[in-house]
Length: 593
Image 1 (cartoon, rainbow, N blue to C red):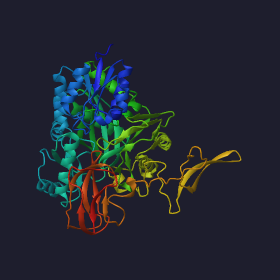
Image 2: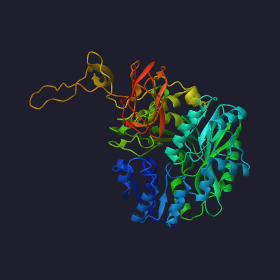
Image 3: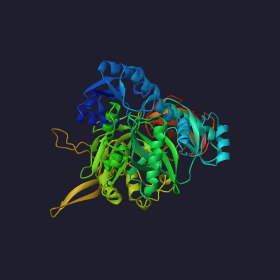
Image 4: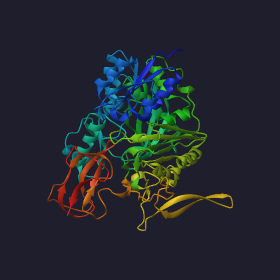
């Protein structure tokens, strides 16, 4: 049967765009990329059959510019648009703009996006379908007083969440009434920056839950199935680090009940295409959390255990074809794990954004190993976009074999030029709590010891000792056997000046690393930023008295807010930035006397 789509424009960037393009090519469908000024030479642009400039640098100026995308659709003649995830993927107005052009939107109907994209109305829809949610509000919250009232009534902690988003963006957890106003402001700013809407709602924050989500696919002919669950409990800042399928230590009776509940939720909003219904699972009970009306970042683990290409299913459904299988035809095999390789330095648990140029990119390989990447060697990871660099996914016959395969693959993965989360992934998978499924959504931040876990941005970033020597890993042979040893050697480049036969001896500049600071050199009066970004809020003024660890300003980098703190107590003598200023790694934002 021929697929009635001939040219698909992917209104996104990075890894997901590359992922969609590959399936399109297998089906004989031409692909169209769009790109910002910063992405002119990006991997998704290089792989596309055609590419069109959107202009601008930031997401708002490019990938969130509806008119620019519509213009690219008209110029390319694309007959379908895949939104990927993030950006406009859960924006009903964008979906309507696409269909208004007579172009197929590869996703659910706009009304379903509107119902489920608004986390408040999605709770109401789930309750009408008989699926209970986490205790929370059904109206947007507009003041700190409302948050305090909710916390006193329902109990603390309270989660403040973006009504039109997901993935942990625009979410803040407050343990008590202290700091509610600042958390509310920060959540609204993140929601506006990432989803284009600042509305927020509240939920009771469960104490030790697991995050288990159910993949669903529905067609326009009344068929809807669930394709198994994913456990996404290893999180930090409410953003997923490791996902797996099937969920460990998860009764099959609960699995079936959750799958049936997910189908009920999907049917309740007239859902069509691929989507994910998310639940919190604790003490044998599960609660509806939200529905993501798009393809999920972690969809590859479902593909590996089900043997189905979810992007292909999306394309068939969007073309009006019925599903070719029913619930009883679905079989699951083995276990799959995914690690999100982000451009972040674990930095002892602080997870600092690490934009920059990738100088080395060596993928792992072998049986049961898959890498979905949006970057390659020589590409630059910008501060203006999401920090996901690649997804490492493995399959094994059971959970422990998949875990051991993932550890091996992580050890093989070589990325230099930026810091990544690989050391944190290794710490997670090697921990006995994770191996025995004793973790929760709060485990990484409250239990896992990441002290000393860091990721230098390059293998050659060792700081010279006072005598001018640095540590180097050197390969040597002894009696024909190869060894790798660590030596202290002079900090000299391996080059010879032409015509002289003498070594060139310039000193390598001292490296700047996000691992070295959160607000300046220890004890110094200079408050510096550890990475590129934009100042969104300045919290001090000249003459203010500050304490050690007090937040001086808030820096947004890679769509995440980071608090820049004072490294000493004293009086603010200079403030060198204001809200909206762009800064680079090492820039001084304030001086404390």
